[in-house]
Length: 179
Image (cartoon, rainbow, N blue to C red):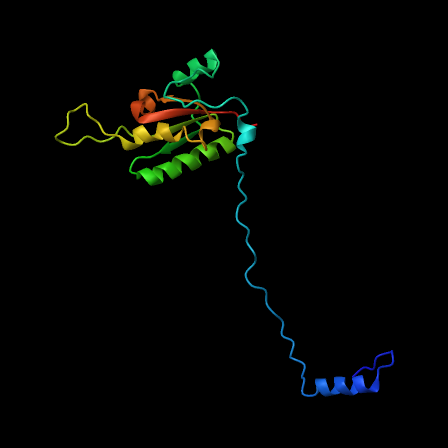
C-alpha cells in the first residue's frame, strides 16, 4: 500500500487498515460494447404558424377556388397540374384511411409537392339498391378530413379529378407552397 505524502493520525491509519482487511481487488474484465446505438430518422414537423398567418380558414368544398388566383384555379380545375404523389385508398378501413390521408398530405407538403391525387373510389352498391344509390364512405369522409385543423392550413383547394385520373372517385389536392 502506498503511503500518503501527508502525515495521517495513527489511529486513522489503523482504522483504515482494519477497514481494508478482506477487501480484494476485482478482476478487470473488458466490457464489450452492446449493439451500436441507432437513432431513427429525424422527421421534419410542421409549424402551422409558418404555414398560414391569415384570417381564420374557412372550410373547403370540392371545387372551391376562391382563395387562388384565376389562372392557377383554372389550371387546377382542368387537371393540368402535374400530379406529384398518389394515394390509393381502395380496400382501406375508415380509421386506416384517415391515418394514411393525414400522413400523406403532411409528408407531401414537407417534401414541397404542389398537387397530389387521393383516390377514394366511388363506393359500393348493394344488389337491391337503386343503381344511382352509391355508398362511398371514404368518398364522403376524405373532404371532411382535408378540413381538419391539422390539414386545412396546408391545403389551398381540392376538386374532383378528371375521368382519366378517377373522376368522382378521386380528388386533386392543391397544397400551399412550403416556406
